[in-house]
Image 1 (cartoon, rainbow, N blue to C red):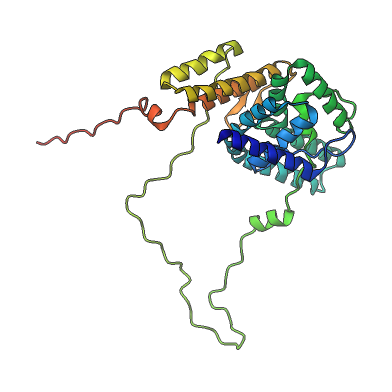
Image 2: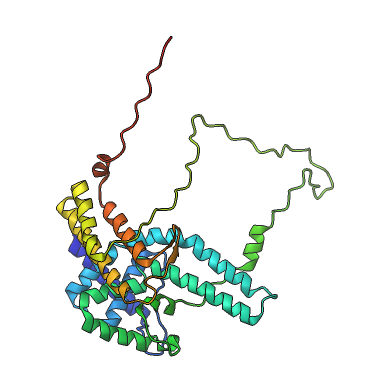
Length: 337
């Protein structure tokens, strides 16, 4: 069954490649999706197409890449949901700056560049970003094939590099289209209150209808309705240990929850993915530069290690986790006099 699904995904990726008929060429268009694509399956097919365009992949490597990307789709969807408000706010800020006559062209360009950099950072941190996919494929094919692929990428993106050296970390910025502008009339409409309906509108015949009770009917009050849950506090993201010690984290969770062999296989795949991305991070100039996330500012390696911990812990079933849930405190016995 799994092999059938994998083959189906390969066909989808191939069909997508043929349908677009826009294989990247030096100096030409770059028809790859940003990680803001809401359809994770469509993004998966696009990433496979990118890998085939840039690398020479055999069937086993392609199957492995599909399998590992498929394991990231739920995390990709969750990340995009959590980032959607930030993306909208950045686009809205860009719209307001563009339409502000008080801004000089120089100030406008500087602010737009800053907003674009913020969007690039959000897209690059996505689990299925183009830069992370490239690091994943690099770890599968080895340094020689990876170097050839990077040279091909540098040629394809030459018109966007503007003479700057190519860097895998900047891939997601290179495929970003012009920043989306929010329709300003929509923003104004949302900000303005709706006009109140007159209490006794005059009809076309000049008659005033009887006064109506405009007070909306109150819904029945439900009994025992619990108060809304408070917002979740930010995660306490701790500094990452050396990458060589990450395996002990995976082994610790497996021992704690008594993972099955099938769960261990998935955990080892997650470990391999995160280690490949960690190895790619080590050579990047911004590896120690804190990134903004919903939990505050943290170094990329710390965020990657925290992702590893979350993904491995998420493999535990509810029954396995139930053994470690805090015991409910029994109600106090009533005291009589």
